[in-house]
Image 1 (cartoon, rainbow, N blue to C red):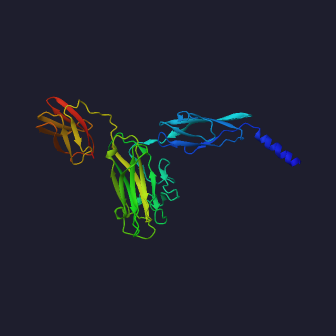
Image 2: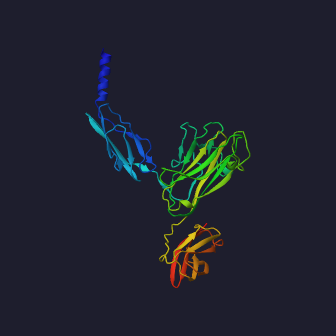
Image 3: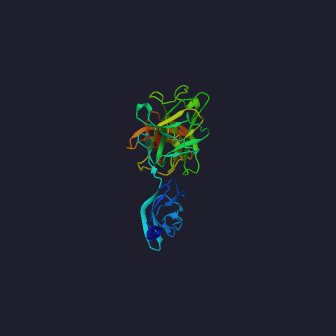
Length: 371
């Protein structure tokens, strides 16, 4: 009897204390405005304890739920406060800048998978919720490193799933010419085929569009093989994807998807985003006198100038580098508005230039990128 009374006394004594507020969250970052986060209450408290959460910048900004779900409407870093209260007192936990948006990466960018764990800015997505995902592998492309990323289609029949590696957000606002390059190794298991797809999103992951897809023999880097494939230095290939269409986009996500077909192992390494970035602050001068447009831009061996509003007459083209030095000039005789002229630019080094068209003292400038 005495023991029972003692236990009851001890239970009452433990309960008669103020709570200790503590919490965590399902992830202390969010990818995009509007994403929700689940807060998890870890307070040491009795069942009568009440809670008040403060989420400045979120919706709702205040909650009395034990484990609230909130959403943040814009990029930034946000404080979180939890106040736990019972009849014996209260306790407050305040965490400044605890929640933050997924950071935007500037160009160029590189992931070589040489760290002991995948960078936290790069996310693994498990399409089938089956635990079969991209993972680090102890082999590097061309013997340039010791690790890569692999997907095991050989030992896992998860056909039809599209397990993804998702990149951080990249800023293409000033990317005048950009490309994605990566190393890949793959072999076909006879009768089975897997594919690699690369997708891009410019609306914070609401939708994606394809920029690359290869599978089977098109993707393979060596002849068919039924063994456990571990590539040597000669069994890799470097792929290049043009990203010029993304110029001006300030937040771009990419996904590398293994489209499973119960085939063979697939490897990725040295994912690099290369770009000619215009950080000069230089702007074209003058008014659009002649309606000058360029195509393609960035240009290679040649480009085409169209003078939509040009009156007939003699015109001069001058192309200058960023030091203001003339590197190319040409004289045109324009016979009608909208005339298009081919200009050979193959002798120009890759970089940013200013093209100036002049006529009777009037000038119009446009930026020209040579890739």
